[in-house]
Image (cartoon, rainbow, N blue to C red; front, side):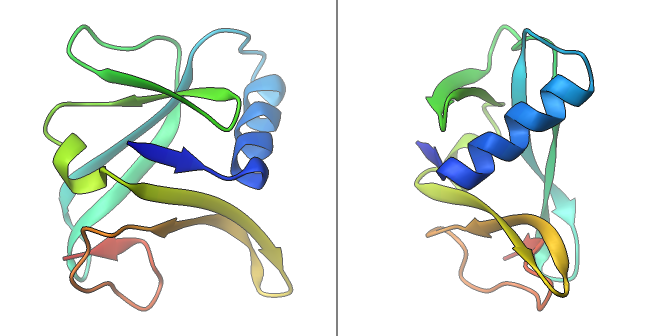
Amino acid sequence: MIILTEQAGNAVKAAMSRAGKTEGGLRIMVEAGGCAGYKYLIGLDPAPRSDDAVVEAGGVKVFVDPDSQPLLNGMTIDFVESLEGSGFTFDNPNAENKCGCGKSFG
């Protein structure tokens, strides 16, 4: 369903460690908004919800709600560090277009 690169998995594990969280995982979801139609929302979550898909990726658990699953299926999440900054990037095969910042898609 979702692939986390090694770099993305390490970034999530580091964030969990800094937050003192030994359980839980990364929640990723989609909501209407952004400049291209949908935007990605990610964050740490202590546990999956009852209707979540739970995927083990990059050494961490990824929680995806049922409404977001079809829009995220096959997506690869990476974490990049560059002179311009660092952050997660999304390679989503379901996106027909995306905005310049890469944080929203349509």
